[in-house]
Length: 463
Ligand code: SAH
Ligand code: SF4
Ligand code: F3S
Image (cartoon, rainbow, N blue to C red; front, side, top):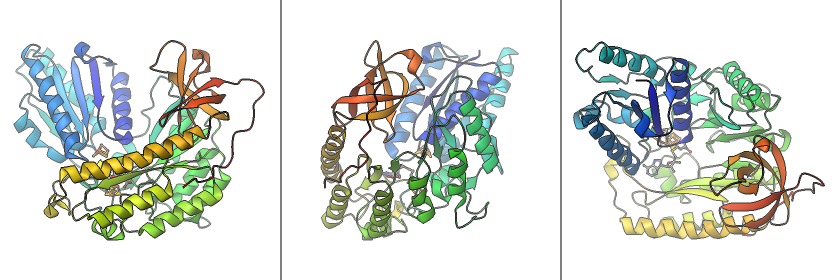
């Protein structure tokens, strides 16, 4: 009764939460399995950010609960954002569900499973479904100390929970609650522990990660708590690379920009969501910045790190987005020259302030706008990758690649994916790789373990 399979939907924060649940369960004697057909317990960690994400998880939950007809002892649970968003309604819809656990209750999963299994083994009646969705004061402090036993070359570290912004399209404040920062010392302890187990790269996670701790901790010498945290992570031996996601233009000041010039471990890569290039739409989205302000931050970043790689999030088809609005998005998207982007078609979310606006932009129009941005992205990404051919890049080898024996996958400091013939021994190492060929998404290379040539330092913005 103790083999657990967890399937994760949604963002990195969910991935980190699933890892934490897995680590807690292992600590209580459960084992994690890779294949759901071997599992006694199936947990779906869900996302609500777009309707499609919810429908996918509901479809999956339907399939999985249907299996209980053959295997009545199977335990099925839904956790995470959709559990929080839909709550009891999920049990009404899927009466065979055993567990519905919200985003502030991940740490309670082991005790709920223990209780359920104890009732089942006592041959009692089938236990009632458990629904645990309450907010919990201090739940940000439960994130700590769920470090995996196995080595993670690159690890996510959640530094805060929740979000206090009110972007009109977004359900996250509803599913994740109020913004709460973890104590800085506890985050640093977790990073030190990871480093001791062989982690080389950490990605600090938060919904507005640069707002970390602004209410809990003071500014010191005009440096925000987030910048103070970056400085301290930079000091930790063994950690070679630092990334974070996602920052917001609000509160993105000189102290953070300067970090790109002075903290050597902070990678020259940033995920910086733009959402739209039209000030009118940004206002309707309740994103409190203009496109000019957004671009000026990027300019300042490029001044201190000319070779920085930038990715973004864009929503096309927000209610009221006209051709002119989209044209502005297209123009700024092209001029800025993003190296990567997540492009989303607007999806109405219940309970958001944009909900009453409906979904007036036709699906075909959204598709078309999405495609235009994809074309721009494909070209830019290819040009950027091709500029690396013939150069040597520092690559952190993460593990075997999907494409066959002897091939390994790693990333450059700019977060470009590299495939290289290597050996298991080098996993977790920073190795110099000569780039031999490139597609828009992947670089192919060979190890250059002797005679390291300098990597290109500046990338002239070609657009
Ligand atoms: N906190 C992050 C975003 C987290 S959600 C930030 O503010 O940058 C990830 C992305 O999903 C958002 O950046 C947005 O582009 C997209 N998204 C959120 N709600 C959406 C919706 N209702 N429809 C389409 N895309 C959405
Ligand atoms: Fe959603 Fe906006 Fe918060 Fe990001 S900042 S999670 S988009 S409300
Ligand atoms: Fe989805 Fe929740 Fe993340 S809604 S994007 S899993 S915070």
